[in-house]
Image 1 (cartoon, helix red, strand yellow):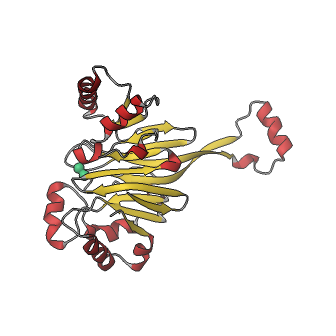
Image 2 (cartoon, rainbow, N blue to C red):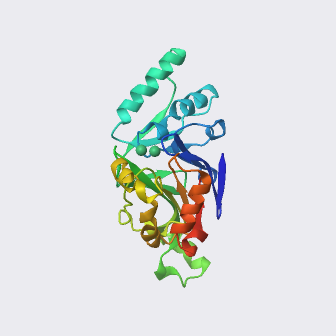
Image 3 (tube, rainbow, N blue to C red):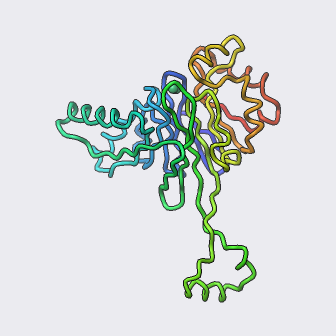
Length: 273
Ligand SMILES: [Zn+2]
Ligand SMILES: [Zn+2]
């Protein structure tokens, strides 16, 4: 399994087109997609699924059953609302087949535009993606209370008194930490005002060679040739490229990325290969 350091966060996992994509950010207690489920991911409490292609959700029954077997309360699994009922049916049938009863589990259907609060200070905004089946991305932000500007000159004592009087002295602000774009042929840059500023961007890049442009369009995936224009719109300090087609060797992937991206972009890009 690969582990890529992005400032305070480490992104662990694997990603290969049509095989499996599963990524964990332990510091945020979350998983993006679960195409397989390594045992080390079982204790992580929040799973965000992008879409129902098998390489992105096949690990869910293992995740659910292993938590159940080990007496760990169900994790929160967020899935696109189209297909949520079928997944529920699938989990229940598999668990009945496995042990004659239904495992405890927690599925939450989501759709683009939703904001899901989790843990104490995190929120996941659900983004619209553009793929062959309904697909969503996630922008995870940290929420913080910030003193309203009109109170910034006050002493600690005065602030305490205002609080005691029930005056609301703070606004909630959001800090965009990480965005995950599962399979998609376009990037919804305007779907959330903070998306461009995310500190870490995880972006698929399935196809690399000029002769595979048509294949990218047909299968609704991103092509490396569109990336320079796309990355220009993101202020992200760290960019992780995922989901490369298995037809490319690691050496070819590195070479194509080197040839197509500018030195500035290369300095912030890491490859999940
Ligand atoms: Zn995929
Ligand atoms: Zn897909």
